[in-house]
Figure 1 (cartoon, rainbow over the protein chains, first blue to last red):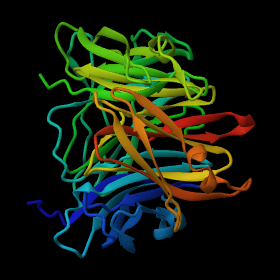
Figure 2 (tube, chains in turn orange, red):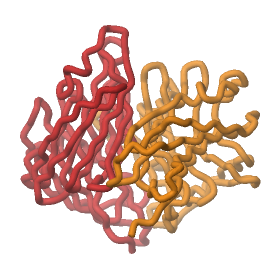
Figure 3 (cartoon, chains in turn green, yellow):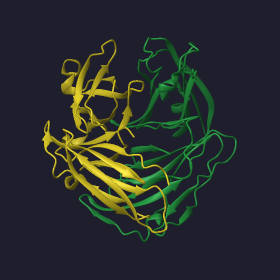
Figure 4 (cartoon, rainbow over the protein chains, first blue to last red):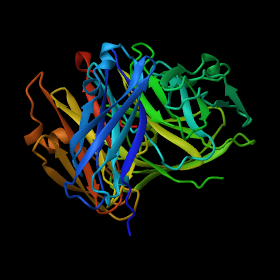
Length: 238
Length: 218
């Protein structure tokens, strides 16, 4: 018998300024059940200089995708010039017997005609044990940063390690992230010192392995930005 | 040691963009060398190439698509393939044009109970490519539905066992994606199947001087 999961939640960040905006796209789904039962999407935002706020979007239907621009739902983001903030997205339904675990969410960072889309961290997904491995890149196309979304009441310090050739790890000194905020920090250039660049068709590339410890309460994302325009080109959840 | 779960990618070597496969070790080992196995299947599912590679703990192995796909035949005007990566490695693909680069995660596995959905923007200067790779030996039927307002046309396509396919949504749904210059409208693509298949969406947004950047959902 299929168990019912009444709601599904994700935790992510949003970026907003004169050129950038954030869109949340969601797809309420109960798997094989495709009847258009009513569903709702609840957005909750928080961040430095931002009072926590919540908006419930009614009118969603099972198996029908929909989306909203976060700045339209929360006018204070533009009014208060909030550049980075945390968002919790929750999909639920009044039909208590539905299993909404098949629901999906995609975040879109829209910047001057370019869109960067990614899957956000799903809260209550089984936590990956150990450290997660990511590429830290420094070349003509990308530079690497880490965004931490901390909804807790304590300062969070990301645990990030570089991996040496002998297999030993070395912790990078990352800044603490204030409670109830989202914060971006670039990986230090010292990470690439001594790393032999690889000659590729687009030029020299330095790519180093970085290990990050996932944490249940805090969602973390690796962001790859264009080094010239600083636009986010890709976002990968930890 | 973690189980070696394979990652599946749709990779192209041109002409619109090039790709580079980047491999990183997931488990640090004292011997500083790890092995991964890469299988390249052409669009019809024939094994075109197979590579065993060693990695070092501290840096990535970068394999460019022109080398990986040299034995693959073109289809639909593109040279592309289904690439399977297994071993204790983290694999990502980076898409390149002259204007920039972006990462592409492994294709998302969907089945009878789990479909995929992607947001789109339909505009004259945009192209959306739905890429499908079949990790299994049996062919798979896939349904692609474009959802825009009250319209939701759909098409069904077949992907051969271990093969790959790419569909330009502006071509497949041309009756619904014609738009005047300087106009645009939002839409969604839903992909579902009764089998199992891996899917990804690649967006192209034209920038200045008819050059643009290809991006996938990560």
